[in-house]
Length: 112
Length: 116
Image (cartoon, each protein chain N blue to C red):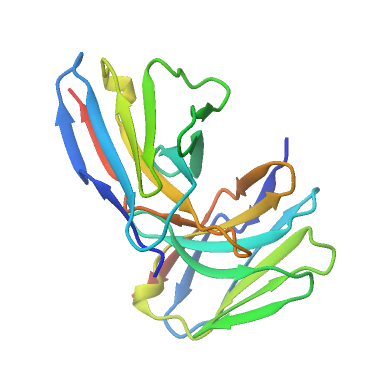
């Protein structure tokens, strides 16, 4: 089946640093989604990408849909304490089947 | 927009009882809702896809008689965990698919089930 490789698995960073995480797949996706999940909560959609090559920003977050449609990255600039959480990428296929494939998540920890 | 609610947020029950979890799309109609299960430190695992007015489609390995899904309206889907056992303890999350060109899924806040 389709799989996503998300890296890194976790990141320890200082407040103010920029963060970068990415997802790759052997399969093509129609849409890439980036979610953030905090403990005890459901995932919250951060950014949705619909076209190959698309670069989209949401505040300090920037994400790109890879030109091959098989990868995506998420950058967070000037991290702040409330950025802590787990970030998931998800690839969406919606032709004959509607399928959302999840990455394993990147846990972001900010060092005090 | 695109708010999904879940109720209850937490439930503790005795082994052998049944538990119902509700998922509602508050400001949009969702023809398709999804039920996920998440174990600690893991990603979400799709259990079933729920289509309004028809039977749910279950993923391989998920017992349909154990996890009953009812999608009675365009804004409500329910998951009933029947005869719950301690191994059913988990975080259950629903999501609703926004129709139209976007096709994104919006997630509820999750329900923490603990079976004693």
